[in-house]
Length: 608
Image 1 (tube, rainbow, N blue to C red):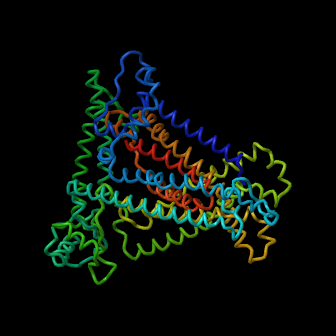
Image 2 (cartoon, helix red, strand yellow):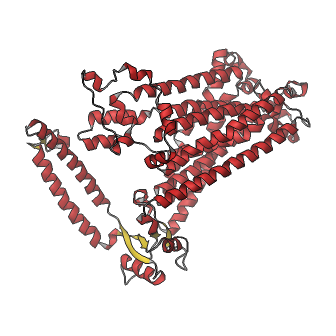
Image 3 (cartoon, one colour):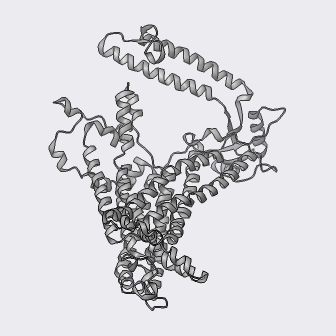
């Protein structure tokens, strides 16, 4: 079990890592060749352009102005200074509300942390229960002496814990209530100021039944004219136009090459050439501008033919349609009511925005949809269950004292100070983070198999799975398996009636593991987000090898978006840890506060 020395080592490593990431970002963002990486939204909006620098060639890539490096941390106050209304206009309401969750964490836990450190920590430290004779079989350290486990059963000291628990509960509910009112008002103002959109009047209809006398389009129109005569406006059936989409993508690629060679010709007045073979590496040498102009004309003719084929072929129409109404009221009635006596037909829901539609799932029949969701629920259960194995392995790393009791021959190796501090203070958090890296991708695939029809619903469903997984495995799993490892000898020797008491005393001791996890994931991990390492590398690779036109350069920029299925469940885990351990082991709260402060600053800048 990690002690104060191990926690201090881990804190030092993670704080130094976090500050190193922040300083590296502050320097990287000043370099001209990184400007599009760190300000992509400004470029896409046309507010910012590439910095022009005269002088040496190297100055186009490296900032040689020494004065700017003296103010390299100016991004911090600049990120915090942008007004909320301007931030909504720049990044959207969803991003602003998400950032407010971190601010909510600070509002909630800073007072809790102050009160807990002032009242509960001294009470726990002077409890002395763990040092008494009857606690000799328990594995504990100085950090555990700061927890409620160090207070004797029946002690009058528990009145302080009970009073503080009520204070914490009322404060949490009050802060949540105020925040809910604020966000609700923000949403209403945003909707009132927003222009009307077609999706606000549109319903997605699936599982349209076939009709021998009418096409799907005619059947949809007839059905809604009969059942919604006062509100129905129009409809659009959904076509399977995958081949047409491929032709459009191919035409865009050819158009990009045409623009590249045409610009090259205008700059040099020399006609560029290309080869007609594979990737322009082999074949007949031809005039590049004329070649791509002819290819574009050819592909446009293929597009017209394919479009006519899709529209005339009844097999290309899938049993789904977007139905628009004259009013939002009519759309709401249709979206929220059953349309047929057969609940598997004429399924309606609010239509997502066009950019939000997940087209692959629109044609899934109702029965198949139910089977898919049942199978994915079973798969999630088994995935959660079997993931207990790596969780147990991680907990074995976090509890060296428990291992020494069972395997005494490893004691000499494990007692080496440097090895022990590294393993207990740093390795468990890293190991758990590594095991969790691939999980969101698996859960997103499972959500797609379930058949949801919009990217936002896929995100919500995947986030729900991940949240459940974190609660069951990371929180409950770490406590259960960790307690078993720590108190294995006590579990074996104690009568069954004493096991719940042993677990009750041991659960607060898992705070040391969660502290190491918070430092690895919530300190260094969050600070690393601001560097945007993957977009940075990908932009320079694309800019070096793939970019041919200004349009290519804009596409190479990745403004990024919040990975909601990953970040939101992780954020909820931190709230859970803070609330659960606020009274049990209050020494964990400062680590939670530092996480929320780091995260608020980082994500506030990312949205600016």
